[in-house]
Length: 154
Image (cartoon, rainbow, N blue to C red; front, side, top):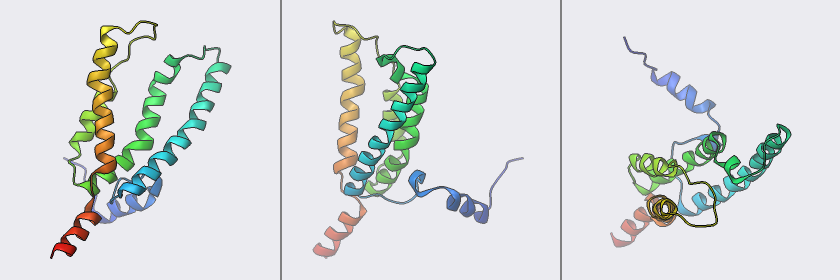
């Protein structure tokens, strides 16, 4: 027997979700850029607090500290909602987000002076596609632009 929410319960849940974390609706290019900068600026003090707590716990401050599951989840919680809203506006299928976020979760090799073959592979398979993905989300015209072009042509 399955559990289903009726439309009243679903609307109540959507109303309790703060707008900051909402994934419903659309997000234009300029608002997407502003929201991304705002969330990146918000992430900085959260990472500073995390690093401070880690130092108080007796851990060393290193790059590996910022590859922890906490930082990964923090990034996902902050950036997934705006990515979904931007994808909705641009008409991009949601499963692409799973592909690129899955790539981003591939492990990085330990820091060293010499670039290994894995580092080159990681840059080619993870970093380059993520840059292209970010540029697509940032520059692909959304619904408002498409409607403007249709109205001008018609």
